[in-house]
Length: 106
Length: 372
Image 1 (cartoon, each protein chain N blue to C red):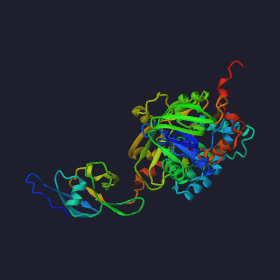
Image 2: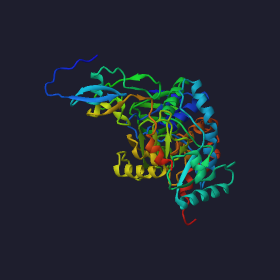
Image 3: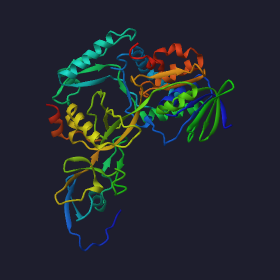
């Protein structure tokens, strides 16, 4: 859907999306990196379960909510992609991270 | 003259629109005069509880009135649906007031005992449960929780959907809603009343003032002294999560959309609706003691709003004796009491006997000198 403009200063950044190795440009947000890699949807909604992708790209619309390095509900457009990042598609509303649930349950 | 109807309701928030809807259900023609979105609008800032436990400690009539509204609520919600209202996400599955430490546990226990001794409240099945029982219901509560008071009657709604639903149902029943109509003066006019507003002049046989804090200024125009004052509360909204709160708390609730709303702060801040970051910090630190899992959850929105508070915290309802046909309705529980306002208070406005029926809620209770 998107084609990159040439950017001679950019270097390749390697990250994974649902375990699949992908490459982005340095300076990309996670949302831009996913769109650049041809990912068509990055989450499903909590209410209807329908697919969503990044939209406003400036921190306003919350369509790009995604799990980054085990933390859900991050705004992909406000986080810069880094080497080794593990990004996962978010399905509906996230549950509690396991360590939190354990802590509260004592 | 911009229009004439059986009843004018001054105020289009939860109290005014519940009364207007109730009046229209009885066949009255009604005009709502609303200030508009510049108003303080407690209806847009409140927490959404339909809360029974603890209400009316010191005034049995308020306890039974609250209980009556709770009992009417499901039918009230269904009734709005029949008139083009919307689903208000009503859930009445019980609620907890969690206690931190032994003193808080004893305070709740004492309140239950006091309220048991009040006459006329009816069945009072609020009870204390110990920490083990709390953890069976809510496994994720913090280690400081010593127990809770539980009432099977507590519940909640989506308060914005409630306001929307009341407006939609009122409109379907022919209620005329006028926005930008801040009321400037109210005067007797023949057998009825005339309201001058920023949107023109309106006339009706009866007039109900349900304008939140503004009752303080408007009610004297019909000979009533209504001593309400603003009381600021803050609410914080988290990111959406899977259901992690199996039961409603008085200071935290998880909505149908998965966000957790928490708050329950009280501040005297005059008419200032700005956010007080120190207060937000205090609320957040406090809620984490009840529910530690919230510690690392993101807060995505926050706001403050002004409660409409009487000196004793109870509703004030009165028909003017010098200008009969004019009524003043004030309370801080516009959500909890919406069903009673629509289905019981509104018909009483039309049928007469208002001051007898609601004698306990008269503002005259504030005129007793402390030495008497």
